[in-house]
Every structure is written in C-alpha cells, then in structure tokens.
Amino acid sequence: PVRWLFQRMLHNTGIVITQTERQSSILQSKFGIEPVQVPNGYPPVDDTTPYEKREFFVWVGRFDREQKQPHLYLDLAEKIPTAEFVLIGPDGFDSKYNTEVRRRASDIPNVTSLGRVDPDEVHDYYRKAIALVNTSAYEGFPNTFLEAWRYRTPVLSYQVDPSRFVGPDIDGWADGNFDELVELTAGLFNNENRRREMAEPAARYFEDSLTIESVSEQYGRQLEHVCCPDTAYK
Image 1 (cartoon, helix red, strand yellow):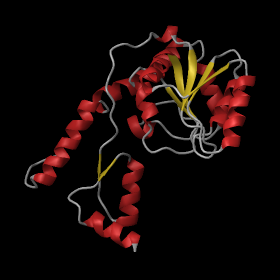
Image 2 (tube, one colour):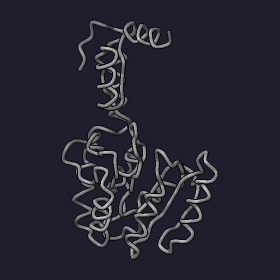
Image 3 (cartoon, one colour):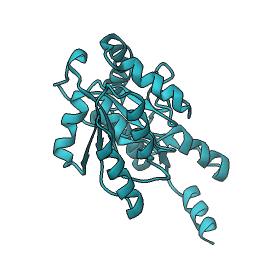
Image 4 (cartoon, helix red, strand yellow):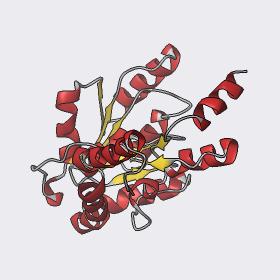
C-alpha cells in the first residue's frame, strides 16, 4: 500500500527533482518518472590556501562501520607514515566500533583524531588540507565534496566516484581498490603540481554550477514552471 501511494503521489506532482544521476535513474526504472536533476549547492569562498602550504589529509564524517568506514582511513594512514592525517567526526551508533576507531587513531603516530568539530570551525581544515579522503561505501550527494572543492581541495574517494557530481574529467577515484587509494594519496603528498591538477577542474565546475546562487536559479526555474506551466524553462 505504501509503495502504491508513493507511486500515485509521484505521478500527480507537478515536477520531481533529484540531486544525482543515480537517483534519476532509479525513479525512471522503478516508477517511470522523468525527474529534473538539481544538485546540492554551497556558498563560494575567497580565501584558499596555496597548494604548497597544505598540511595534512582530512576525513570528515560519522563513525559508521557500514557506510562511512573510517577504519579504512586509519589503514591508509598506516600505509603512508610520513604524511599527517586528521580524522574529524562524531561517534556513530555502535559504541564498540566508536571505541575501536578512537583507540586505533590514538595508536597511530601520524593521525590526529578531533572528534566532532563545530561546523563554523571545520572549514579551516578543508582550507589547509592536501586532500579530503572519502572512504564511504556509498553516498547520495556528499556535502563534504562541495566543502572541499570550494577551497580548491582535491577529493580522493575509495568507492564513490567524484566525477558523478562534477563531470568525467575529475580524477581521484580508486574504484574500490584500496591499493589505488594508497597510490593516489601518496601521489599528492609533497607534490603541489599534482594537487593543482586534481583540484582545479572540480573547483571551476563548483564555481560555475554548484554555488548557492547557481543552484537556487535552477530551483527557481522549476518552481516557476510548476506555478506557471506555460513558462518556457530548461
């Protein structure tokens, strides 16, 4: 009954908006809906750190074994002992796993675990990071990617392809291969040119298409179409 009601609701809406290509594909295949895709947005910034002055790698998320997998970030830190790794995030719902992650982080000399960081302060870590490392098994449209790209910080991702959100020319995806993630991370350490090569295309795409101003304009066009069906829109 819930599925039937949900499908009926979908077919009686003026428009359905999704954030990602994957969400659009699911709606098309399961419900025959042709949605409009509008991505997440984030405010741009003016102050970014030069690539040669970046200090550490950073991971941001909740301590969750199944989705976020911070233990893999700790595995990565052990593989590159000369680099600094910062771990940021609140506990998840598994207290045993939380304790395990914190214990391991404290035992690895090149890892700094900060726990939960206030949203107003966390951006300083994106600004100073060599790269954001994402170890999630899956994501919708992660705000952490946007938070990194707006500071011209590359994104290295274990299983979630960053090019899903900013186009096919974006590097940094390990395609589920941990050895590849290690290689990508090591390749950015002490290599400011490689950092620039990876960061600039995503930063330009962010500035063109993923700012709050850009995304709000897209929402505005769709709302205008619902309110005024005869209005031309794209």
